[in-house]
Length: 381
Image (tube, rainbow, N blue to C red; front, side, top):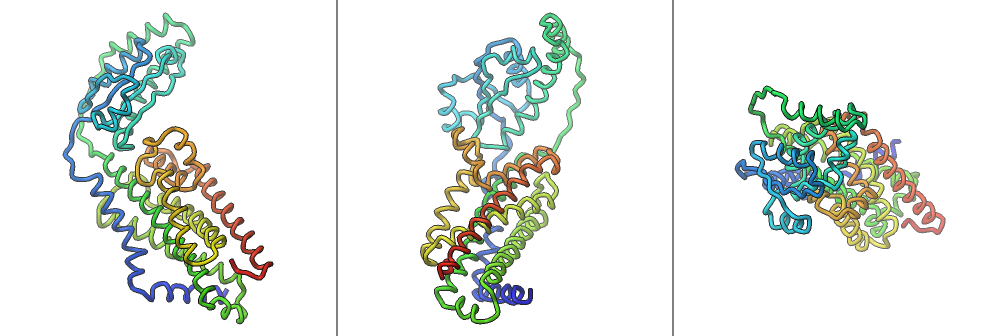
């Protein structure tokens, strides 16, 4: 234990001997917040423009579109399915709703077919639309389940529902979409920063081997496993500090409300940090030199962060890439935070947390296997 503590202090002194590293590890998260605010801030409030593709043409679908038309600050227009990509990429609409064929019939049976919502603006738009549309469709689906297949009974209840004298009261509420968008973007950038930080810190192992520092340390009672363990502890300490700095700055300096408890956000990111360390260890263990490790880290980190949706909403990507994103830990961390923002309880997302732990365990086991093989062959890496 004393050896681990001594090595941790030694590595921290070596790392922060250069004052620029303070800026590198703790200044970049603050820059990420500023960049996210710049991306989401400054634009005045305006109507949300939604395109609608109606492949059903049933009464329920038509009435749902009519319902959307009556929502304040929402502009709805009909578009063709073949024109969806052009409408979105040219920013003629903020998003497109696609009502599938058979939608009205499925609502009558109480099992509505999912409505696809395509948007480049991610949660900023999708949460606004879903909050209205999902509640409306859920009410109609309840009527379908109560009718239990009786079409006449369903339409009788449907007519009463549409003609019900609802009493509407209007209250001004603060817009949380921007804050959620800034939070998502900030965490996306932080995930990238954590991966790069883990890569830089783990690369110290190879550098000290090249400088013969590692060989000199092993002439003392310090074991190789103790040396690697100390590097893992240093990684955890610095990434924990990055998480604390980011969350504290969001709350106390930039006054960003992520709409979830800060401790939940911190715990998800801490679990992800284990995967980041494990992945960086694998990269280092398979690299032949510090130069190759330095070149390999961004080749692994940046493309996987792009695939996970760290820089843009994952909904922007093709379906097969959206599914492929769930093979990397970044996606599970971001998806967990998004679901927490949508109101899911922390306990209900245990599967996300277990998968993050599974990723970390897998990466560590691979690194241990490579390390053991290297030790047997008389090499460190």
